[in-house]
Image (cartoon, rainbow, N blue to C red; front, side, top):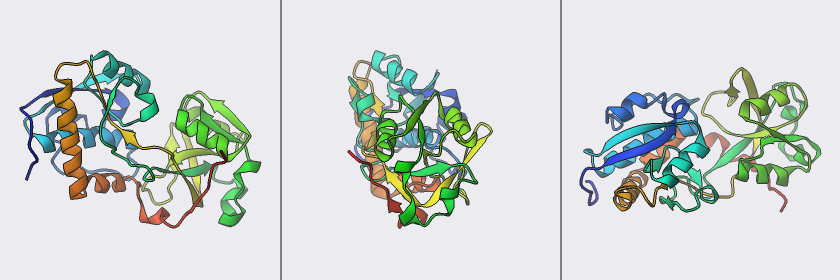
Length: 268
């Protein structure tokens, strides 16, 4: 049974073409509630466009979704701030969403874990978990990813900045750095591919991101209040039914495989 729903709305979602390419048909045709094959290597930001669409349609299946192309995460946030879009197509950190309304937490504090990723032949991958010392290693991270940058600098005093994820992966595979942080996929070997660069996890150790992630909703677009309320109603229904957790588990979040892995603590 649906919670008190709103009248049908047209909801404009800002998302990069790369993020919504997999589920574009589902979103644009209003078919998000159907069963869709979710591959184990689907990235979080790709999944979240489907999750967002489902949340709105759980509130009211008559809502209409419009996808607005955006260059990247930062551009999507700017579009929502200006009111040219109603909501961001992927979740955001609270610190990135100044002057925006934040939905209820989609991934709560403690639900966002990342693996330590390195090249396939790095010796650290064979170390016992209690001997993994990242402080003696060289990390690499995209510096404008605020939370990741702060976390990796708390794990080691030796960190280089990369322009993007592909660059970070390439630097590691060239032997110019030892590790980076990445979300853990549900694939068998948990490896992560970016472009032509593949990295592998140090099994048995992980880190927890310090914050929660939310969808960002415009404060100035038409029907902003109604969009905000509809989104939170839909997300609440999905959390209560377990659907929210199930979707994320499809791609490796909150996985039983990593439940007992040692959490490496960042130094303050």
